[in-house]
Length: 452
Image (cartoon, rainbow, N blue to C red; front, side, top):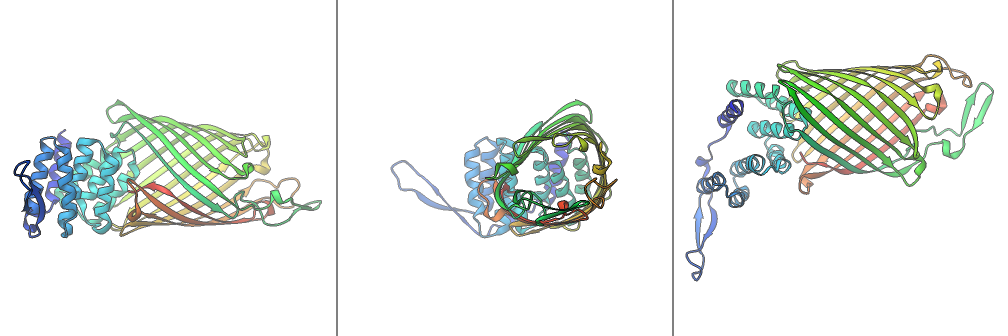
């Protein structure tokens, strides 16, 4: 409670005094008696704010919301944004309408990215909904915009307390996904082997299609000791097409403790994954993973993740084996509107048949830019993969080089409720020594996602 009071006091240091901006008048009506016609009076923004705050403090949330929304229509943007800010706090604190409150704060930031109180409060609400990494990103952006020393100390304390938030949550998104190569297959009609070229059937070549892409997550956390929580996650994803043979969907579960020490967060979890392809069981995998997140300065965060899985391939016993991977990441906010993320990763896939055992190394870059009522995210990744030995029928062992480029735009200006349309396009190109793995792909995405 003391930390919460300190946080509120720090925000108060940042709030503008709107009483000095009360030149515009807001019309209102007062009824003298049931029989008398309504008498029109005018209220200054300061008077209407006072009335709204009084209604809020007395528990008349409906009247308070009506007054705040009237102020949101004021021609003075500072007055309108102050009303959005106070309404957002009321919706979150008193009515548990956190998602709607987050949308209002994002509206403020869309045209005023340096509105630090709104950004810090948005971080708090993101964390309350379980979006801890999004909350951390907002805090880095707030620091990039600049904070008074007294406020920065409180924000530092708050950033370290993000792990103790809402005990459960649900998220999902849904999109149409046109794709010119849904099976990531070669466009060649022949396959070269040590005994000659084989003709490939149409089913084994690249297929285009319009699919439905979906992702969802249910999670919960349980405090088990100071600075220690137990977190459980259930994840589902899938791509579905008219051609059932190309349907690809998976179900995963994670369970494990998270420990917070100062500003560092260390997490361990046991994992399980089941995947189906074409309606048939394709893969089972179980294992564990560990991650560490460490702030490296006011605007930067480092992360380290490692995992190991035992994988059972239902399509081929020769591909059964253990997958181990490690990834190092760096996230940085350049300004209140712009940030970037860099990832470097390596993996080792073991297999019963050495021809299917591989090692890979890759890197990825992500850039985001908030522009008015939308957020642009660009991505680029490159990876190199080599097999231990060649597959018996092929003249060379498998060596792949893969490039992927993507651009996504979330159009919050067109939101409906707390959801906004999202559009994106991805280009993939894999160059391989084996024709079977050499392919190109262009896919798009038209869907809905959270508007903040």
